[in-house]
Length: 229
Image (tube, rainbow, N blue to C red; front, side, top):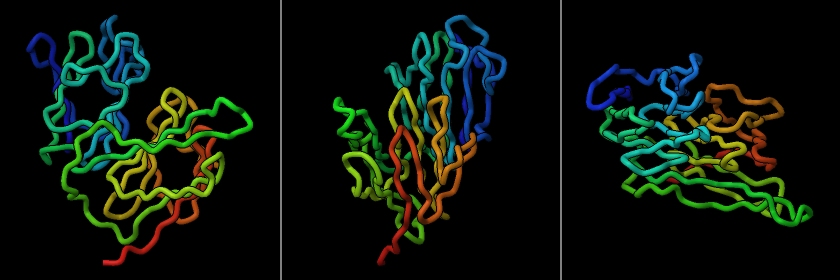
């Protein structure tokens, strides 16, 4: 199971196992990992853990979140990555030797300059080097069909380990491909995405055929199709 090692100035302070699907980090007491230091924002960052994969999200912190010396807003953690929060360091350890074995894919929705033109949809890769896939096969390949906006009717294959949906800074969710199906998890925004008219909670929700997802003002339908060997 993935874990974090918290240290400051080379001194190890504690070690934590990432047992929850969503682990919050910040100065306020309600966080799962509380760091009582003024350089740390009240709600600084969050880590979504799904199986041996971990997804780091900066929660609009004042001083920023860094991984291996580079500022990040969203980052798929890999074994031995070092998260830097002020003078504190959180070393990510994955027993599998690496958090992600294939390139993730992101789909972001941005408001069109013309309100009557609907919303634009852009499919872009996360800045993560691709590697041969070792993800366990699923019985069927998940698909997302856009139902609203200028790209209504467009279909996206959920063939990656992680697919990010939404608009950064407003509403972001991630769909993960697991051996027994596809799951959607909220990762950013005060308003949670909606599935079949009901908001998600903090836990991952398994998707079923014809589920209607609404995120960042865009509606889409999940369905699966049989993969021919």
